[in-house]
Image (cartoon, rainbow, N blue to C red; front, side):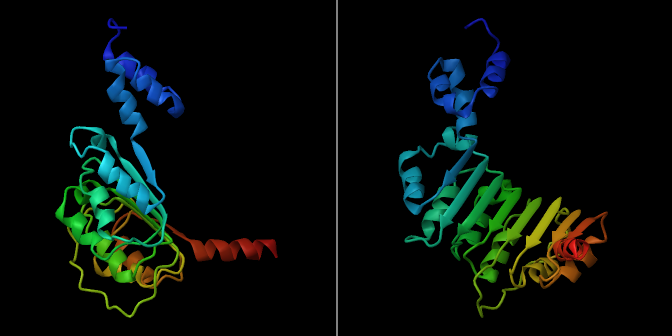
Length: 240
């Protein structure tokens, strides 16, 4: 085993089923790092209790396990007993590239926490599906990620009379590679348009306020456009 080059060992580990990575990490010292990188490359939290255990039990060493994590998914956490818990779980994940929230309450203070730390700079993909959040908080979260490349917002946020705070114009921001907006999500399209979010690929629901503005500013780039409302209407017309 000691005679094998590390590249060959890594290739072997990359082909192993996820269920065997715990065993492979214990097989030999040279197997441990790659096995842990795969095992912890993507993690999922389904409750606030799980998030608390993670913050308490996992060493927050920038060179340790947390440095292996590239994808985090929070799911079905509809409220937080301690809203700051969300930010604490994210603040040391300097290698995080994809943040995925499905049916999750977004604390009002989260955008500020991300914008002040390294995590906000590393995230390039953000998925907000059926968020439990006001439009103002969602828009602030999106704006707080300076290197965002892919944004997907699906489903309804919480209706609120809270006015949108002024967002900085981000004309210097590189165009998004992909922007997907679907469902009853209020004025998120308008907020993004006002902040000059341009995208190479638009996938939009035609009922979302601000779609026209997004299409207009994105037409400055070569843009592929899919309007969900038009496709659905066409489907039903063809069936009839």
